[in-house]
Image (tube, rainbow, N blue to C red; front, side):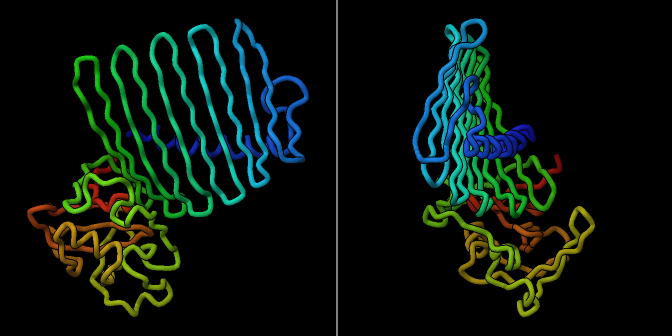
Length: 300
């Protein structure tokens, strides 16, 4: 996964929301003619023919609680379909697929502006090979985790992963969780997405310690981060997501500050430390809360 994939996810969101606003105001969306009037609920369709024989059909719907639209364009053996939606509860989505004589591609992005969570995926193939990528993140905590594979025509497959945390982007190796590995996102939480809470230390990943009263928790040393900011480490609360993370990797929290430790940076500029074991070597790691895994931090 490259920085381009992360930028594409953000771009899809930035392009979609103004488009939905344009739909709401009925300003000529879909090309040609007088546009759509969405002052009342309903579905409207517009078709047109462009240069070189391209035909395009757009359908847009006002659901009363949001808007959706889909556009299909064809020209000879080439076709492309895109869809998008936005609703009053903050949810949005965008997808695109296309094909021609040389290959095909698919991509999708979805999320919620209130929770900050978003996901994206993409795939494509042509005579030279194929690729797949996916990622998820949270705009409130500025975290992102993504991975990708690419296979060439000779059958060779390449893997990559990207993780963004605390303002830094890393391309590192994921340390597979020995308990929750192989499961879908949020499998460690019975399939329910974990929503970080900014009023708690580490977004409550390490426990429900209120930021204003975090001193009530036991202090476990401190770490100087890459940006020269000193981060205080606090005791992990039992039954928290962070406690599950440590248990699954058979790690025991220890005060930060000693050499050759496992230093784990969590959400919201949080950090905890542990001694290395047969599963996790000493080094710096970031947390991917969607799969409850840790990713080695290697600056991009």
